[in-house]
Amino acid sequence: MSFIVKRCLSTSTAKNAINNVTIIGGGLMGSGIAQVAAQAGNNVTIVEVNSDALKKADIGIAKSLERVGKKLHKDNPNDAKNFVEQIRSRINGSTDTKSAVQDADLVVEAIVENMKVKHDLFKTLDQAAPQKTIFASNTSSLSITEISSVTNRKDRFGGLHFFNPVPMMKLLEVVRTENTSDETFNAMWNWGKAIGKTCIKCKDTPGFVVNRLLVPYLSEAIKMVERGDASAEDIDIAMKLGAGYPMGPLELADYVGHDTTKFILDGWHEKFPDNPLFEPTKILEKFVKEGKLGRKSGEGFYKYN
Ligand SMILES: CCCCCCCC(=O)CC(=O)SCCNC(=O)CCNC(=O)[C@H](O)C(C)(C)COP(=O)(O)OP(=O)(O)OC[C@H]1O[C@@H](n2cnc3c(N)ncnc32)[C@H](O)[C@@H]1OP(=O)(O)O
Ligand SMILES: NC(=O)C1=CN([C@@H]2O[C@H](COP(=O)(O)OP(=O)(O)OC[C@H]3O[C@@H](n4cnc5c(N)ncnc54)[C@H](O)[C@@H]3O)[C@@H](O)[C@H]2O)C=CC1
Image 1 (cartoon, rainbow, N blue to C red):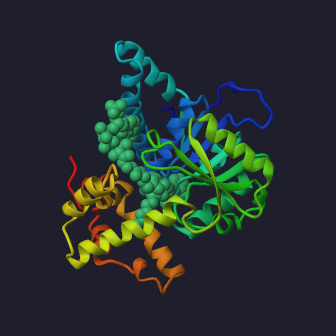
Image 2: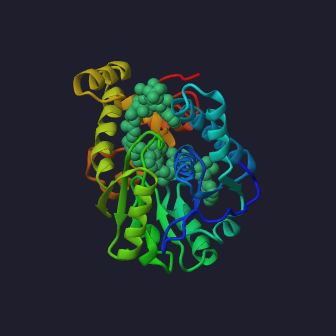
């Protein structure tokens, strides 16, 4: 990843085609989104809060690309290496939000799951980005309509909800609000397909499709541990062997990250105060306080190397 924002020539000249993509936030999700966009030939810029965070994103992307490269070029380590370098060369890093969106056809926001922080960001982006730029949020649980409310481009705003790990998960939820124009929705949809995802259309309802079902499930699993109904290990074994999930719910909560999980549950508790499923849990509070954010920090319900 180069730290200077520079643009290559567009890889396509089709009208409304998305070639230049800026991803705000290079954490778990942003780095995955950057990777798949670059793999599809986009010129990608990742914006992060500082150069250490950019470096972390670059290392994560390189590791993931190595896994992909090894599979694509099983018998030729040199080709695998070239593949990794070629994709990485399409990704630039920046800590300057305003300059990073100057040429953007699409901006995908993947920062912390907090409405105020997202509002502050989108106010800045709306001032800095050209008129044509489409804005999308990768939010897990917040209203796209409410996020977009601080901008003057509500017709060019939608949701692009990816799944973790982005390079492996095939689904993309393409979310339209009452204000999203057909042109914007079609551009987001076509881009989703161009980067290799299977797209589904979603209205701007809480959790869209997947998280409307997944959040109560994960939340109940955490509450089961808290009540002492069963151990985290046994619940995970149960859901893998008894329901065919690739990961158990506590493994998955570790995978998502407990800061994000807590943000989601706290937000939904505020929104649905009568639903006991979203009431705060001591376990999550303790995890976040102690920096045990799951796999990304090395410890959560389980320990990771
Ligand atoms: C309470 C509130 C909570 C709300 C949460 C909201 C969060 C959201 O908004 C929405 C979400 O994203 S929810 C999370 C959705 N993700 C899942 O459910 C993942 C479930 N796990 C899996 O699919 C597999 O365990 C998985 C694919 C991850 C790994 O597979 P395995 O377990 O078989 O492990 P591996 O053998 O290591 O990997 C299998 C193949 O995948 C490749 N791979 C894995 N990670 C990769 C990555 N990051 N980059 C590139 N390649 C990757 C790996 O190389 C391997 O490939 P093969 O060698 O060909 O099998
Ligand atoms: N973790 C998951 O499984 C999923 C998360 N999401 C959503 O994606 C978003 C990001 O989540 P994660 O990647 O998991 O979080 P993360 O904590 O791994 O990454 C967030 C990144 O954003 C950066 N950041 C914060 N404020 C910024 C700003 N103003 N400008 C630039 N960078 C900034 C942080 O430094 C951090 O690296 C959230 O809205 C979350 O709900 C969506 C799908 C799945």
